[in-house]
Image 1 (cartoon, one colour):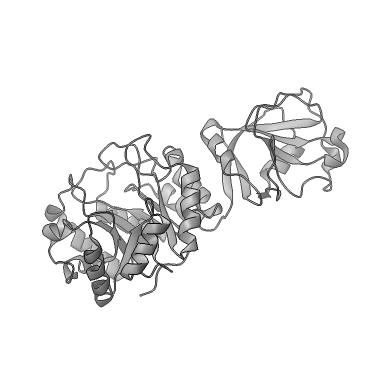
Image 2 (cartoon, rainbow, N blue to C red; image 1 turned 90 degrees about the vertical axis):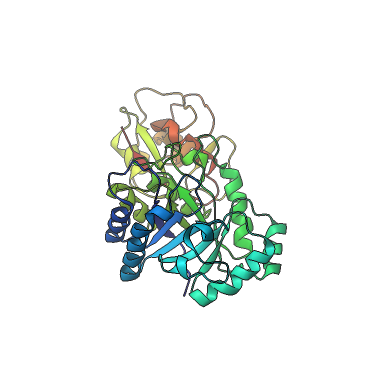
Length: 372
């Protein structure tokens, strides 16, 4: 059995635990499959969940997965065998539920990991690592146990408690580390429509994604190379979220939402909104600069705005004809800057997306989405 290719999206389902979805877990899986999603995550170790009392529905989902060639990954702990049956040498009870990948969160000793590695191949299953806490030392220890890191999925945690999610800088560092060992990196984004018990505040990997639409959050993880696979952490029956997640696999650019300046002219709006931008190869102290716009045909026709506005952090600007050969250059203010009659303010990055400015840098592809 081959591992899924890079830039994969998936969603989650949970049994024996409350969810804000009106649909059952089975119907949520069926809806996602109808839309083209083939990869699913669930957890078998939550102490609040009545997994043994939900096995009939789980078996139905497993049958659906077999019929429609869906892949199910399950978060596991040694306690799972007490709930479902089987042991480290016999994974039939898990395989019969349609589970193909076992995410080892915690609780397994080195010897148990060795046993599990000898067993998964017999049942055409995979081991998935917990990618959030790993270090070089722990990855080398896993290699010593026989874990084939090259091609193995390393899945980040999700964080139900508000204010407990990971920092962008940490996720970037972990991506570099895990990719260096050949791992496939997976992360979670939060539904904005449906939430799973316990806190009902979403299940993202990054704290900065807790209140961000999942399609946009996934595009950040993909576009910056921080994740190869992105799953919705929450169970959802919102088709628009699932479609946006799928669309993120096809658009490798970082999406930044802006509120337009009503005084901006059509020419500068077109520069900002009608293309995917690429950050210049350098990093600049005061602004982010897009490549390739100045001196383009028509740039000299961008007229100065009637009012010159101060450029607060997050202002999206286009240089007008007064800037001569710089006319048409697109920038985003990294800090508060004064008004300049040579610079037209097209709009402002919305407050929720200001943290994305930390992710912009040399050669990053990005585009703007007008909201409000």
